[in-house]
Structure formats: C-alpha cells, structure tokens
Amino acid sequence: MTSESAGVEGVAGSAAEGSGRGDAVGWAVVEEGEPEFAGWVRKRFGAYPHHVLATLRKDGAPRLTGLEADFRHGELWLGMMVGSRKALDLRRDPRFSLHANPGPDAGLADGDVRVSGRVVEVTDPGVVARYAAEVKPPEPFHLFRAELTEVVRTYVEEPYVVLVSWAQARPLRTIRRTSDDAALRVE
Image (cartoon, rainbow, N blue to C red; front, top):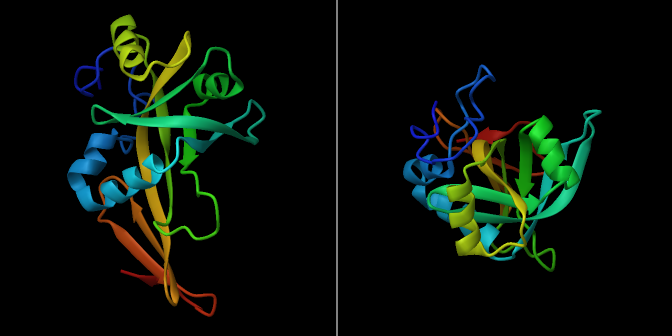
C-alpha cells in the first residue's frame, strides 16, 4: 500500500505493510462502515482532551502515558514530543491501544471507548506542516497516523454490561453480559 493509496500523503508506509496482516485500516473506513458506532467513539474521545496510550517497551512490558488524540481528515492522529518514550516505543513497535478518558466520575454516561492497532509515522514535511498549522502543537513533534484493528465501546444497559466491537472484515458485534452469566450473549 502506498501513501497515496492510503489517502494520506507523506506517510512512511502502511502499518499493514510488512506485517503479513492487511486488517489495519484508517479511521475513515470505520466511519464509512459503521457511522453511528463511529459517532459514539468520536463523541467519547471529544469529551476530554487527554487520553491514555498503551505502547510496548523494549522488553515487551506495557507503557501507559497520556496523549491528546485528534480525528481530522478521516484519520486518527497521534502527536507527541520528539524523543518521548512513547514515540520511541512506537517507532520500534507500532502496536498501540488508546483508551478514551473515562471522565471525572464512575458515571460513564456515554460508555467507555478504546481503539487498538498500529501506527504509521508521518514524515512528509508538507503533511506535518499542515497538521501543525491546524492543531498548533508544541514543535518539533512526532506525528503518527493510526491504522485500526479494533474499536470497542463498553456501556451499561441494566442489567447488562454491553460491549460493542468493530474489527475490519466482520460485522459489528455486540456482547451483553452480567456477573451471573455463565456464557456470553453475542448478537
């Protein structure tokens, strides 16, 4: 996949390239395939500016750090300080999970959201400059574009905890369960 075929110029390659897996896609694919679900996801990420990013350290252990995520031009962008541990983690191993800020209390009125996949570092100076002009982050910075393998929304619908999950090339899946369930209810 070239950066042109990915719809984004200046990307240092596709996260799916070289991985043997073609199941990671840009945010626009989620929006086009499941617009209502994607709307919930964006709403949760938009409720607060700071979220929790999980990357993998050199030894394979997880690293959790704060991050601002940005949905723009049909993509999910992750910007971070030059030389930050999370940026170095992603350069070495592009796999990540991003958990939306759950908010100030345990209410979670709109549920809980996370996305997972791989990132592609954006290196084209023009694309980076366009992003910087629109977002105005502290410069210099690393810019990554997310390619998603999974998007999950969890919420309470009494008496159930409901998990709605998206993955490329399969229908949206809903699981409803309670603490008493011996088996999952998959819809």
